[in-house]
Image 1: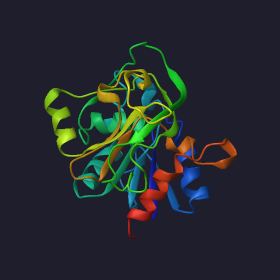
Image 2: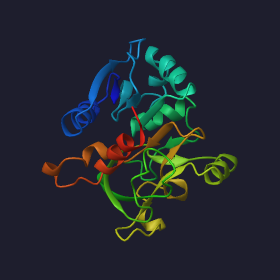
Image 3: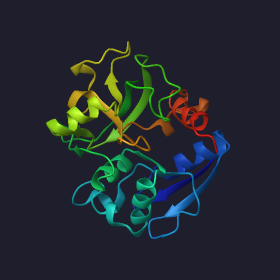
Image 4: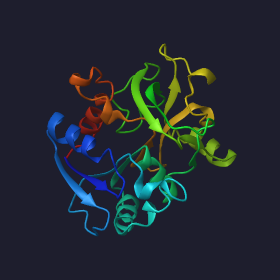
Length: 230
């Protein structure tokens, strides 16, 4: 499978993502500069974490207008696979490829620690190999990670089975105390209605290497590769 990892000014998880996809999973990976206007035939676009354009205005608000995003939006609208992690999730919401928004954490502080999430649905290529209710330890690192959606969007996300992950405790229980950033309904990741665009705040690429003592995130990448017949 051929992945394209977009690099914006301020991206800082692009090399982590490239390393996991290329070195740990053996896939072909291209680094796509934000000014590029050619996706070079990739099968999946990845928008990595970081602080694109210094997080000025709102996180992802400027990156959404980078030249490459017109191509990414067109690619997604034609059914192409797009994954956004952390800042990438923020960019996808700003580009209206995913509903909702990512707001400041209630503490107004940057948080960086391991969190527990559990898949809610296996009905996506990102979660097909997961076990709903079984917790995964995945790091979070953000200042604006509080997912918010209005009542109509929230109802639609639930009704259409678009909620992929919720924050939970180490036993898999979805509780207010397990929510690290105040996200509505403990939501940690979602997909679009067409199920080809995915966004999540936790960083699976930081939990996909045995040398780091945590490979819980690898199941999500393995799920993609097992689900896509390319």
